[in-house]
Length: 155
Image (cartoon, rainbow, N blue to C red; front, side, top):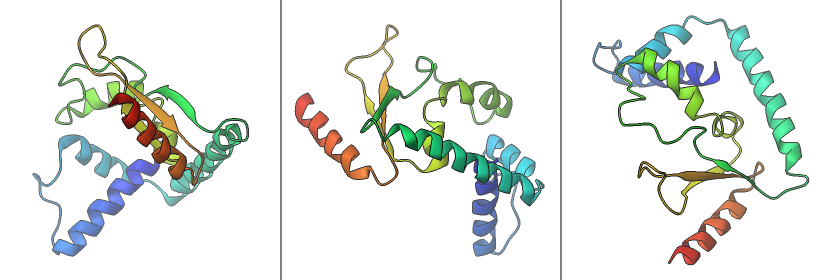
């Protein structure tokens, strides 16, 4: 809901700057589906989604009372073959995207800082692997310090 509402807001703001309506080739088909789906949603849906994201943020944020960072895979499934998440095929994106974004979506929605870094070595298919480090709100400095340490260790 929140990502869809933001898509509508961003596109409408750009169209206002341009002083024209949305043209057929302005956005990808998947973005068009999001735009059309969410532009008619009631404000109460956005309000409920904001409240739910806040609750999720509180629950996840409580973990940082005991740990400095959360470590997870970046993707919940192995790296998809090229074309699996084809934005020209909205049904494909709907079918697959949430499977891959299971570990990253809570940061995207709550605003908690996170970084995805390459894991050392590819998977069995030769495709890249990544791990995500997530920190508490305001924890960007810890993530940047870790990134510097990882760079030094990899050199």
